[in-house]
Amino acid sequence: LYVIDNQKGSQIALSCLAILVGTRAGLDLHGINIQGNFIAISFGEQEMQMYNSFNQGKPLARASVIYIEEAFRRNQIAPYNIKAKTHEIVLDILTAGIEESFRQDDEFEAERYKELHADLSDELKRRGLL
View 1: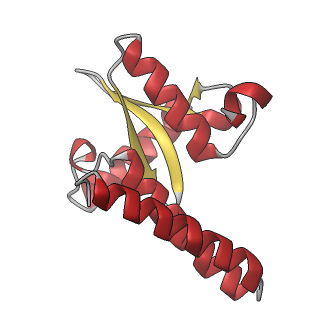
View 2: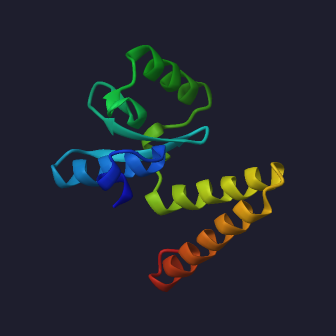
View 3: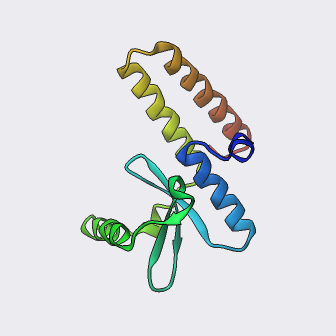
């Protein structure tokens, strides 16, 4: 709700909102985690398209998408096979937040991320998603 009320937020929150709204509107959008960035992605018959949540949801430049596609090919990864469930990405981001907070000697922030991670994990287990 923060993202909707304030029309701003983290990359993952904005991308997740775009995916949820887009899916409801009939678009085939997914989330993908690329080097710590959560991006909305669609797979067309001819090409894939990625959307930058920090640029008003505009598509990434075709040159950037081609570069990422080439990286997938070099590593023999099919991008449609690495689509992530939103809760998996959120758990990964919370884990990264814990690690980064400890690296910056911010124990308070690290504990906050750990609590959020534990709460989300417990809820996902309760729902049978973990």
